[in-house]
Length: 298
Image (tube, rainbow, N blue to C red; front, top):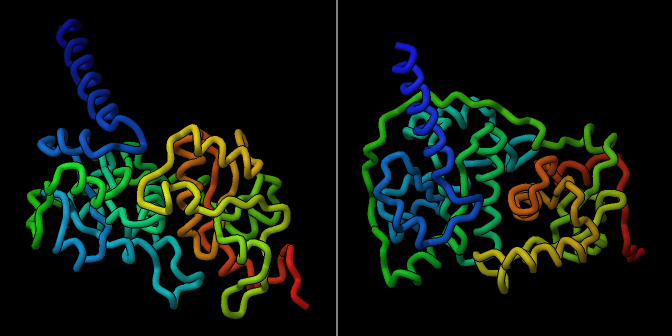
């Protein structure tokens, strides 16, 4: 009887390890994804807006547009992380469980597409989701690689609704109060004009967080495309920015562009202490908290 129980436990552990190890890493290539589409546990999460999804998507994908992963412009702060309960309810409704291996797929036409996928990746990590990856190059790269390989129109999912039980990792979040008291390195992922204070959003003070390093998010992709640069080049860029080996708090205007620099820092550089300042300068720039203006025009 003891031997039987041991074999059962060993079998369950083997299954668990198999599921846990299903994704090869935080980035997957098109050939791996294509060869894995027949695995029923795999979730291909398409974050294109619905009109784009209806035209082109990977067969079997579940569509959840990126615009619906953030609060609307009227929220305070705007374009921020929705309540965790609302995200988990929708995940469960789509048949995605906490243990589901999830591959996030964007259109792949630009750095912005890649940062949108990274933002969804961050959101799932905030929920504690372990098995999550991004398709490098997005749908565009996948279609070009296989000279097709896509579906169009609506698809009815065969996945049954489940209860998604999150294990929130709030250490991935940064808010203004925490950040003002923290000595963690800060990384500004915006354009140079925004970083030095030449450009600012409506009602915002121009400038950046005091002492912030600068690394524009679109430098991380090849020619501002939807595919990341090789790891060696990413290492060089982080060295250039002065934060190599140091986890940083990443910020931009609304926490979208900075999701990509955070993803590279957290998932590819292995700095699990890296955080994303969700509200970013759209919040900080309207407070009386310290701000540094490198280029003053008046």
